[in-house]
Image 1 (spheres, rainbow, N blue to C red):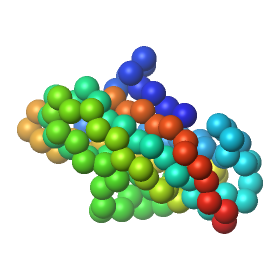
Image 2 (image 1 turned 90 degrees about the vertical axis):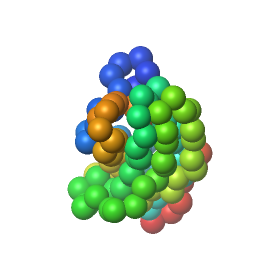
Image 3 (image 1 turned 60 degrees about the vertical axis):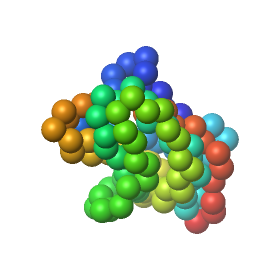
Image 4 (image 1 turned 45 degrees about the vertical axis):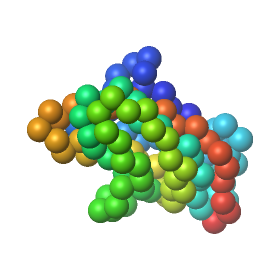
Length: 112
């Protein structure tokens, strides 16, 4: 669903909205949450990624923690926003303030 390695990495403090309904086998309606494999790679410094429903306030919890030079994945269940999208945010609150490449694969979905 998303692979920033061929375009632009997610910068420190940046977010990206990702439409999930009607894509990659996810129905266009009746979906409450999606199950994702979220991978962080190519980061120069430690940080974390957070996912949440687009249009809602960002939670204070992380979905995936990573360290510089590490490629790591995590299974994430993300509630879907009213417009059928989720938001991903890169904290990377270290002094280096580096970007991270993000890969998101759909694993499944849960009904509303």
